[in-house]
Amino acid sequence: MSKIILTGDRPTGRLHLGHYVGSLKRRVALQNSGEYEKVLIMIADAQALTDNFDNPEKVRQNIIEVALDYLSVGLDPSRSTLFIQSQISELTELTYYYLNLVSVARLYRNPTVKSEIQQRNFEASIPTGFLCYPVSQAADITAFKATTVPVGEDQLPMLEQTREIVRKFNSIYQETLVEPEVLLPENSACMRLPGTDGKAKMSKSLGNCIFLADSPEEVREKIMAMYTDPLHLKVSDPGHIEGNAVFTYLDAFCQDKHFREYLPEYANLDELKDHYQRGGLGDVKIKKFLNSIIQEELAPIRARRKEYEKDIGAVYDILKAGSAEARAIAQVTLNEVKAAMKINYFDDPGLIEAHKEKYKNGTF
Image 1: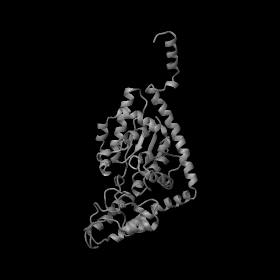
Image 2: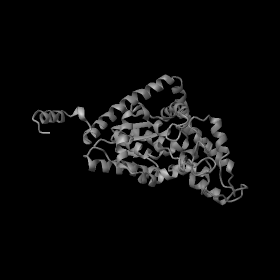
Image 3: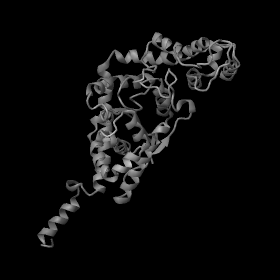
Image 4: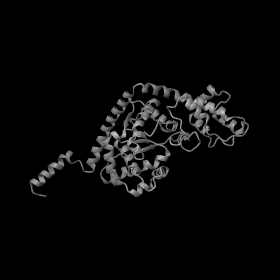
């Protein structure tokens, strides 16, 4: 079986370092690995509308921002198919058919959905589209017969629901859909990068993000204001690295080569951590070190983005071509699904001939 990846993001704002270490960097590596026949990257605007239905302009404006972030980190339209979810109408039709395979009670039991309902304070006024977005996600994954879906641990319940839908469809009708496998982040520090304020999640709404498109000065200011150890009041005080956002970022980005270039008095991150925990190492020094590392990481991303920003029309052309390619793939799957469900009335010559004979011979 061909190995196919599907992944993507909701266009609710520019992408940040949390997206970069959690998914984007690995997507580029997977794209370049040569292990996958196809890599599909979706801008999930239809999903974004489930909780931004009253602000479509927000979603509309952020399509290009996400596309620029994709291209700037190294996603290559000659190797990956970049497309917009809402432009693939086959996904909507598949979602409609799959809704019959899932109960409302099962949707409510999905831990990811329950958590996000609480986060958004929907309570009793949950938009139906939001409650059912795990079914939409199943349509996205199965439409392209994705064998591999890179996700964080928080999305595992969503993938399990997709697998349930696949198994139920295949058992009721016929073996048509592919059951996907999960690909989790390899680096535990990349499972979830905290916000600059130390909160568990980097979030646009909390204002604690470092965006990929931030200027060098914006990045520096955010890093120098980062949460560290509230008990580390003096340089001489012993410091704690657990829950210290600066060290979490260093875990995610720091390599031994960075010490040789920016902080040669230490050989590696373990030595830096030991010194901080003993006392005698100030927060400003480690923040400056982190800033040097992040600036180095973001420099080529900024440079590529500036090049793509010079021709926004070409970026839309990339999305248009990718959406056309994705739609052609989804159409094949939809045809197979409709055949399995026996609703392909006009594409089944045998059915038509059988009915001709039936009424011709009066055997009805």
